Length: 205
Image 1: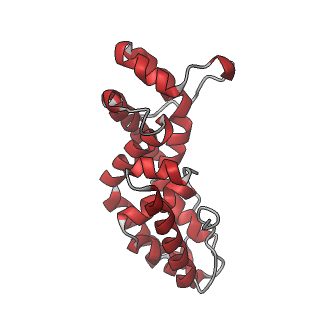
Image 2: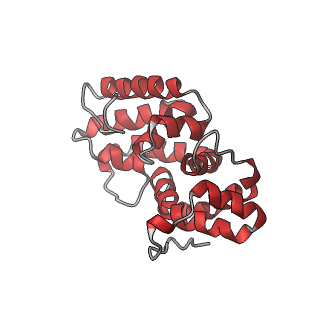
């Protein structure tokens, strides 16, 4: 199944209904949830494509929005905004494909020196930015060795460009945990690369 990632840009932003209001409206008029889809489909599709691959993203983007649609009654605007709520569903979809993701990183580690493709996931493209061929293998190994929680925090920050608060909402973890995990993971990756900065998610601050 191929996801249509074209969204309408014809609406004046000043006249747009808020995300939270749309979710509320969709509880009575389910078709209104399509407006949430239009607003966020490109962003969610891009995130899935970078975490997994673009073919998988075409299929899985629909699953993210279908899961959110089915769970729209559970959205609580008091706990956060719609954007990180959707990333939470994206994380669940990615978790179902964790084994395939790990296999890709293992293959990259074995073939780091020969890797020369632009059609793979973000982890692999990060590796190709490191100059030393030997460092590519080390970075792949470190990414693969991260816990699920650490990897999710890192990549939500680096790929989704979510704020610490949004990452906390997406993963349902305390705000302070986000900062401590990011700091720990970035230090670990730099140490594994002998000080080379893999440029994941900006500064530690």
